[in-house]
Structures are given as structure tokens and as C-alpha cells.
Length: 154
Image 1: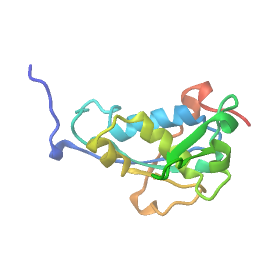
Image 2 (image 1 turned 30 degrees about the vertical axis):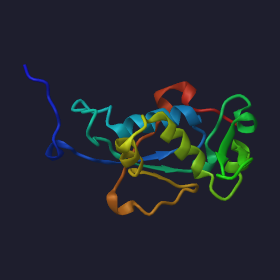
Image 3 (image 1 turned 90 degrees about the vertical axis):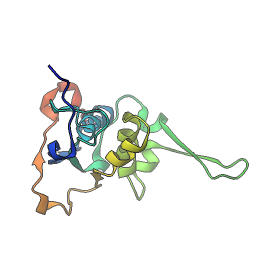
């Protein structure tokens, strides 16, 4: 019995639509990261981009457990001396680009490297309920009933 290794001809990419309204951020990010890598497929090959294209809508309505909305801090550095800056998750979610919280959570669930950056290009996150990918006919993946802990009411 030989070990199966996928080739580019074996890859079958689908489009998946996920509604993030009321879903806990970390649980959403882990499910999306598995879909982007393709680990849900029996033909998973670690060095190939096997994953699906994922569309996340309502990213501004994602939930966090505990006091993470106020306590979780995102840092970045400007490159100048003393240039460390920070924002809380609440400030980002109430700001102009709330989808960045979901993007960063998914990015941090993927391993670092060239392949992960390519897989992140297959992720589309939108703050509202509208998205421009109707022509791709995405399948709806409802992650709320998969586990009762996936949802949280604010």
C-alpha cells in the first residue's frame, strides 16, 4: 500500500459561506483554519493548498467569552523608537474595519510560512451580511449546531 499524495489535478476547491453572527471567535477561527488548510478532506496533503475558499459574513457580530472584548489587546509597532501601539478588541470591532479581528484570529491558527499566506488569500471576511461572491454559489456551513459552545448570546 502506497501513501497517497495529492497532485494539483486532484484538488477540488469549493466555496463555503459562514455566518459569524453570535459565534464565539476562537471556535469560528479554528473551524475556518481547518477548512482553509483542507484538513477536513480525506485526501489532505500537508504541502499542497487543498483547502476551500471561505466567505465569512457578519464579522462585526462575532462574540467573545469572558472579558476578552475589553482585555484582549492587539499590538503593532510603527518602526520608530518607542513606536509600540495597541488597540483592544472592542475598539477594533467598533471601528472602521471590524473584520480584521476575525482575519487575525484565523491567521494565528495557521502555521507560519508561504503556504499559509497563500491559504489566507482564500479567506474573504465581510463586516456586514452582503458579499460579492454569489456567482460562485457558496455552500452554507452552519457551525452553530455543531457544538452548543459555538454560540454565545451577548
